[in-house]
Image 1 (cartoon, rainbow, N blue to C red):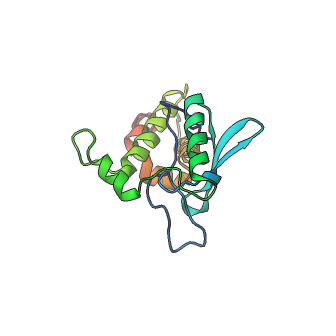
Image 2 (cartoon, rainbow, N blue to C red; image 1 turned 135 degrees about the vertical axis):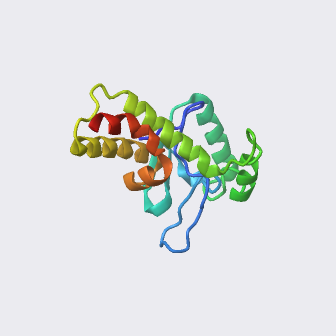
Image 3 (cartoon, helix red, strand yellow; image 1 turned 90 degrees about the vertical axis):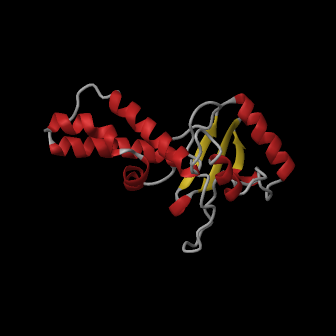
Length: 173
């Protein structure tokens, strides 16, 4: 499960706020509303439907971020947007970062790849067979997809750089 905390990654999708081909409305950082900030038993969470209908329930653990979300929820009300920015404005901002040319998807790709890289590095005994390799890659993809709010197949296909698994693939031969 992803955690929303200052200086730490979260998997909130910041693009594709709605898709007309589905019967639900997917939300992301630019479309979150006050009702998506929920406090239960003293714990704050972001609860919303992400892409492909995946229900996200992200704990907000950082006290400063809790305060920011609480203040934004108060100002917006349950039906109002938490952030006064559009996906295109956010995309334009992303292009100004670094040497330019970044897209909002690049943040998720970075998060997916860096998370996968850490998970692979934490494995004490690398897989020795193709079957073990597939199982290990799937386990990594499941953890990454839980953070990003998508499926393991999407995580592997779009958000985890395949080079992350090169060391494992070499050990399998």
